[in-house]
Length: 285
Ligand code: GUN
Image 1 (cartoon, rainbow, N blue to C red):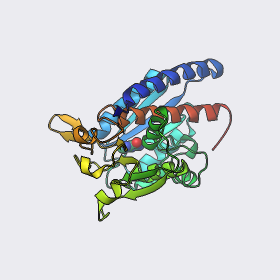
Image 2: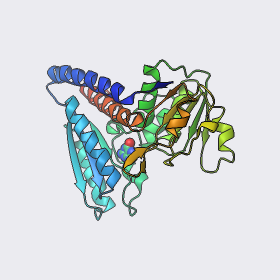
Image 3: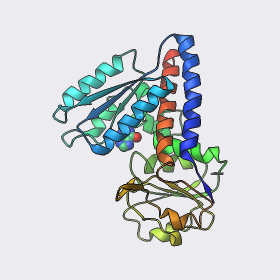
C-alpha cells in the first residue's frame, strides 16, 4: 500500500508556482492578484480562507481578503463583485461558500467574470467542463487528478466510483474522470446498495462528510482510495474512509489530513496563475 502524499505534492507545486510567478512578474511588472470574499463567519470557511491567503502570499500572489457581515444584502454583494470584476489588479475572484441563507448562491457566483472564476463554479466554466472545453476546473477534483497523475495511476478504462454528488466535488469529479476515459458511476444518498457499487471500483473517490462511511469490506482489493471527507473525531480530523482497515486492502490511499486538502489549495493557486497569465497575454476563455 502506498500513501498518496498530497502534502508533499502540494509543496512541490507551490514551489514551482513561486518560481513561475517570480519570472512572470519580472516579465510583466504586474503581480497576480486574488480576491477572496467571505460573508459571515462560518468556522470552516474561516480556516479554509486563512489557508488560501497564506498559500497565495507564499507563491507571490497578492491575496486580498474581503470580509463582509452576514447582514450584507445580495445587491451590495453583487456590486462588490462588479467592482472586483473591473479591478485590473485582481485576476481571480473567490466567493467562499456557503453564503448566508438570504442569498441565491447561483446568482452571486454567476456574477463573477468567467475569466476570473478561479473556482470554476460559474455556469460558463461548468458548461465548458461538461463539454470537454478548456476552462477553469474546480480546485478539489483538479487537485485529485494532479495527485493521481503524480503517482502514474492509470484512469483510462478503469471503473471509477465517486460517492457524493455535490456541485463542488462529486459532479465535477465524475466529469473529469470521464474526460480521462474512466467508466464513471456517481453514488449518492439514495443509492440503494452502496457496497455493491463501491466493491466494483478501481478508483474510489469519497466526498460525503460522514466518518467511517467506507469500510474495508466495501473496497475491492488493490483499489485506489481518495478520501475528500473532513470530519471531526474528538480533537482530531478524519475523513470518510476507515483508514486503518481500508489501507490494508487498497493499493493507494490518501490520508486525512495531508491528502486531498493541501492539493485543493495548490490547484486553486494554479488556476489563479493561469487567470493572470491569460490576462497578461490578452487572452480570454
Ligand atoms: N466552500 C467549500 N469549498 C469551497 C471552495 O473550494 N471554494 C469556495 N468558494 N467555497 C468553498
